[in-house]
Image (cartoon, rainbow, N blue to C red; front, top):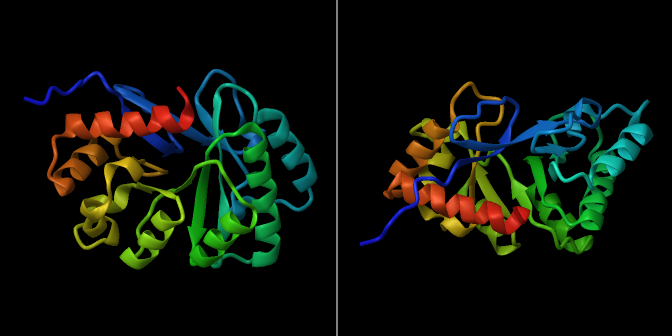
Length: 221
């Protein structure tokens, strides 16, 4: 009989809210909002690029990146639907990838309609640290390309929608490349885990173990 350790916490790889009970979360913060004493990721989101303070923001990120509580860089990445040129977004994204490489920490990536560019940049910059695509809800072909190129996939609230790509794809994704998150949704990570376990036809305790193992391996906790 397989014995499951239900003491493994629910790992919330990316959230904008603090919940807590039975949960180990990574709180998403921008450099100016950083606070000590909490596990977090710190980065410059493409939506919130401020060119007037960009140099200072990047310097602040560099100074924070090596702090023990900063588990990851991000979220950062590329978004074709915003009014900032992709070239400028790419330059800022590469700066953050370089910071992540220097401190050897994973990156929480935001990507909207730019997955080919994301994969290209990973190859061009020879990124060795893990890259996690958060809030995945795209098609299987893109997911397979991401996996082929070493990315991890994090699913969130889209799992709760029966017609979503996420809910259809999670059963095809090996747990070794899987993370779960709440992002900015007003929902508990336990709810996300329960739905993910149902869709993968596995015990939620086993899923907790698997995701916790991924977390320990990537974040060296």
